[in-house]
Length: 573
Image: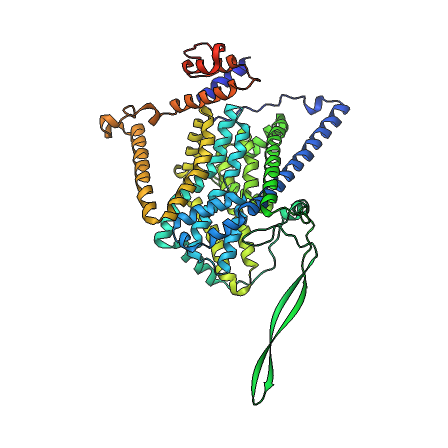
């Protein structure tokens, strides 16, 4: 019992300390032959099951991407081609973010942008904010993964911080680099110089890597035509008839005249064999069916992966991984450790061709205490670099006459992420995403419902608000956002001064107590959420209402009319 008390006290003092990992199982040397064989078979079975779950997770992301393209692909294509909206950098940023949320892949959305730039539908300068938006949109997946550990307060604190450190890096990078790009155009100028300095030849088709493994399953379920609008491929006959207009010259008296002839040419195309080829369902119906199924598989795989990792990464295995991942190089090369982690993150993301998959894999490891938040941060930065390789490979596969612009916008994506790393990593003082992620992790551990509010507000409500204001015109956008931004900046400055230099503030601003409690504390909102949860649970016959009331932390006066006689008036638990 003594070690348990000591650990609990340690967590109260510093909740970010890594849990002590001990080998509590039977040692290998103490096992007999049967026990050794059984342990090897168990580990092998768990590894095979883990690989299978990861495979299904990646396939479900691919099918989810196809489903979103079918449900909203045409609308996404129309948004991309609406240049009057895209002329506003904030609108372009939000569109890139929303489209990435729609297709659940920054590689897909950035490749669409590269294609549109190479085809002349977008200028490079117009596409830069969209590329920045794709970075933000791709970080929502690992934030959802962190929600699977909401049951354990300490694990959830670490997991949510490990996921949102990626969010904060992307948001801070956009906050600094987007105004700088609008004012100076440095990314466009820098990449233009690089493209002009090399005579790069067109390459072959970009390698698929992970798609080679997943395509046999995903394409047997659904295959979406490669177009901006996205539609179900239904070419079951395997050929296409195309009418070509021929112009031939013939002699008409003393001067030539032209005669038009139509020639029908039969071209073989790829035959589709997925399960929806011969159905009469519309693209929307197919997309909704796939959306529901892929989300179910995705959530199931995430929960099972977290449970399986918890069972595997215990004992000696956890101790070894913890030591390898969190140990720094000896002095004077300790500073190189983080940069090696960036390279590892970039390489792993290049192999799986998805930053969402890689960051979603390390988020549970941060939650269970195998990887430190300070080590997960450079790994996430590396994944941002690794995901840019897809667009670069796609650009280099473009025709020679279109290679310059497409390669330029792909390099913009790369140098945007490199610029963000320069801003927020080399100097320890500038690693603000880590401190912000810890603050948010601490807040969500205390009020776990706030994690859902954060996801809805940052990835859906705020982008949709900005996009709606952009449609109304830049005057409306500036008139609404400028006062909001000014108030936020004022609040941040006052909070910093309250903590470090309160004597510089007038007495009324040294605390926020002059405001109503709901305006400076989450406690009243927590009571509202608690009451709403109690109302829902009290209506469910499977729950004992008295148990709910006793376990709530707020004053329970308002719960009496909701729960009837079962609830007693308890001032505080």
